[in-house]
Length: 316
Image 1 (cartoon, rainbow, N blue to C red):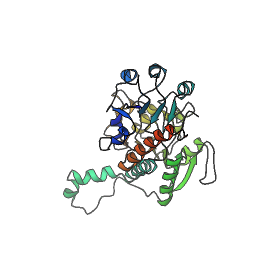
Image 2: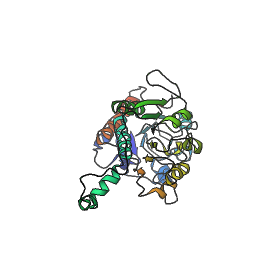
Image 3: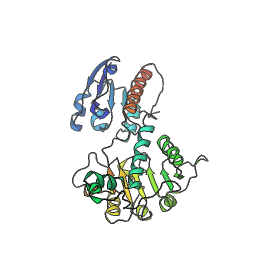
Image 4: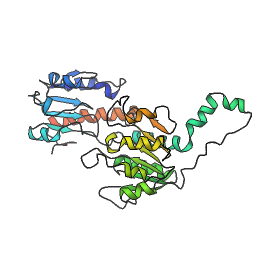
């Protein structure tokens, strides 16, 4: 069995990948240019991939391919219909990053709500020492306790964020396509009007692409903050950028982008250095412990497939 790992560096440089070779002949590429994918998968039985696109344009050359393993929960880069029609199994991993993503979500909310950048800058640039005053309380900041935290997408990550938000004393409301009784659910328009903190945890699909549009963003409270740790394309990025620059909302925390990495002509490039915008490089999922769990799950997906078991399958 030949295993081709197309973009190993997306899982970091600090993990031991030797276990991949224990399952078969393994060819591990730190990264593969998108145009070269078709050339390196021709004799692969198994492909491991994170971000590269796999569809008819390259999969047609993989004549031996039996299984694709995605080192992520999201799989919008894989043409599932093509795989299903050509008897190629596809597996993802679920639940491995819930704590890691929730941790960054809450960290962004706390930093934005506390105006922490302003206060640390005041000390770090020597202004505090020169001020002669024991404290500084401007800009004004507020407690999270008692605020409304709106969660868009109540899957494993959304529920973990909800638990932390409730522990901080927030009232939690949620948008969920199939509402349940565990957390008060509402429509998306109501959530955007009422929430003080909004965090987005939706998968990307035809249904969710652009679901948070300009009108939705314009309905937010003037001091509300929005955090997106899901997929960049679920939000109108241009409209969100304008809202920050025009001081229409309190701030944003963004870890995901419609194009990654984003280019200099991307709307968010205008926000570099803006204290109301925390922009991070798609790292929310990647705590060390989470990445170990992810790799372990991928390896178990491969073992299970060749044992004839159905595990984390997306094509059935």
